[in-house]
Length: 324
Image (tube, rainbow, N blue to C red; front, side):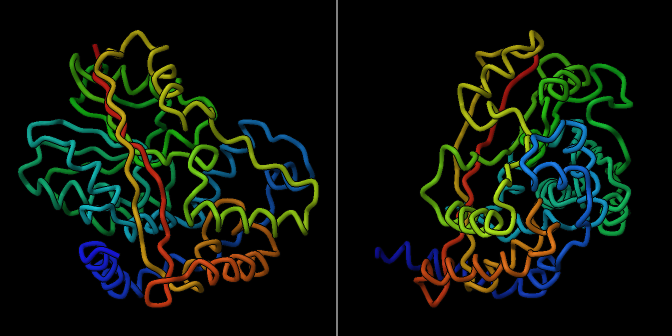
C-alpha cells in the first residue's frame, strides 16, 4: 500500500478514536417498532408514499441525532459530506437549508463562514430535531432555525441565493415537488446544491453495501416476504435521472447542472460498524434488530483489514444547478 494511503488510513482512524463518545450516542437503538409502513413491507406489500413519509417523520422525531453518523465519514481531502457541501456557500449568500436535521450542515457552514455569513435559515419538520439544533446553535447571531415543510415553505418567492440539502431529496417519493418549491424561493441566478448518496443499485462494490446486503438477508430470514420500502424516486440515484428530474422544471437552467461523485470513509471496528444498524431506517425498528446486528458484525469481521478495522465507505454525489 502506498505511504500516502497508509497515512490517510491512520489519520482517519485517529479521528474515529476521537469520536468514540459520538459513536456511543449514535448507535443507540430506536424504539419505534410498530407502524403501518412496517406492517406493509415486512409482509410483502408495497407501501404508499404516505406510509413512508409518516415513518420518516416518526423515525426522526424518535431519534433526532440519527444523522450524526455522517460526521464520522470523510473524503480523500479529510472533509465530511457536510463540509463538502458547505464549501459551496458564499459569504454574501442568503441561504436556506431544507431538512436540516439536528444541525450538522449548520455547524459546517458556521465553521466555514462564522459571523461573515450574510444569513442562514435552516428548517426541519421534526420538533425533536429542531430542539437539538437550537440547543447546539441557537445563539448564533446570523442564523434562524425553525419548523417548516420543504414542500410548502413559508417564505416569499425569490428570497434566497442558495438552497442546500444533505441526504434529503433521496428519501422523498416525489422530489420534483420539493425541487419546484426550492426554485420558487430562489432568486434569479440562485443555486440549488445538495448531497445525496449514490444508491446501492449502482455502487455495489463497497463495504457499506456489503454490510447492507448482510442486514437485508438476515431480515428476510425472519420475514421471508419482506420487500424494501418504496421511499424515493429511483432516478435520484442516477446522473441521467437527476438531470431528468431537475430538467422537468423550467425554472432550472439544465446547462448549469454539475454532478460530482465522491466517497466518504470511516475506519471502524467490526462491532462498531455493525452497531450502525441500530440506527438506520427499518433495521432499527424491528424486534429482531440485535440478530441483524450480529449478522452484520460477522460480515464486517470478514472485511476488516487495517488495524483490525474495516473501511466503511459511503458513495455520494454533490449536485449543483442554477435557477434561470
